[in-house]
Every structure is written in C-alpha cells, then in structure tokens.
Length: 123
Image 1 (tube, rainbow, N blue to C red):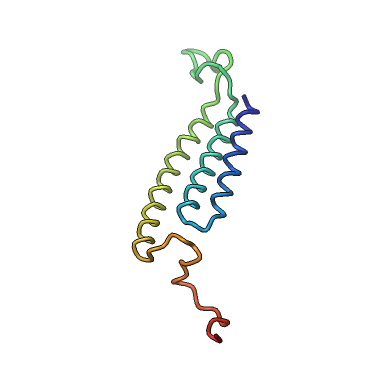
Image 2 (tube, rainbow, N blue to C red; image 1 turned 180 degrees about the vertical axis):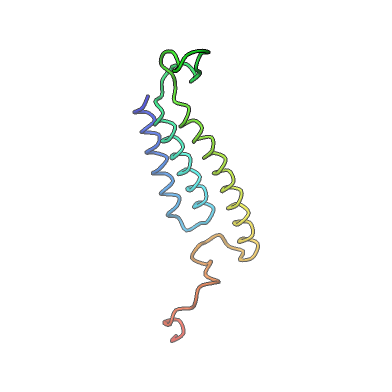
C-alpha cells in the first residue's frame, strides 16, 4: 500500500510542477493545490497505513491495546486541509480581482508594478 501511495504522490508532484511552470495563473493555482494534496498524502502515509483499531485507550490502561493507527498525522492532515482551503479561497479571490483589473491570466503580461527595463527605454 505504501508503494502505491508513493507512486500517487510522485504523480501528483510531477503534475503540480508541470502546471506551476505554465504561464497561466489559473494553472499555477491548480498546481499549487495538487502540491498541497501531495504533501497531505505524504503526511498521512507517515502515520503507518494499517488496518489497526482507532487510537483509543481503554479505561484503566496506560496504552491502547493491539495495533492502532497514529492519530497525529491524521490531525495534521485535517489542519492542512483547512489551511489549504483558506489558501485556495484567497488565491481565487486574488485571481478574480487580477482578471477584473488586467483582463488577462498570462503571467508575462502581468507586469504592471514592475519597472520598465532600460533596454525598452532605448528603443
């Protein structure tokens, strides 16, 4: 199961890098979300993928009985999902406002705040 998860993470990272190298802002955003999901899978897989019981401690015992899943990576992934959703909402609002003002999603044409090159002034 870990090998399949590693393969899926590798494919997600490769697809996200491919999308993030594009010159379209929306493709960059989708690549960022894919990279976030790949990181979530890595964190989730670090907690051992077993068919064990939930990490519940019986009354009067010091440790859980038997093989249990690690709850910390699951909690970290849930937190990362919430943070990723907030990042997605912010960047979608940013993309909408950028398109409204500049009428383009091409990152090469989004050079409003950058100073002009000295070579362009000579032409």
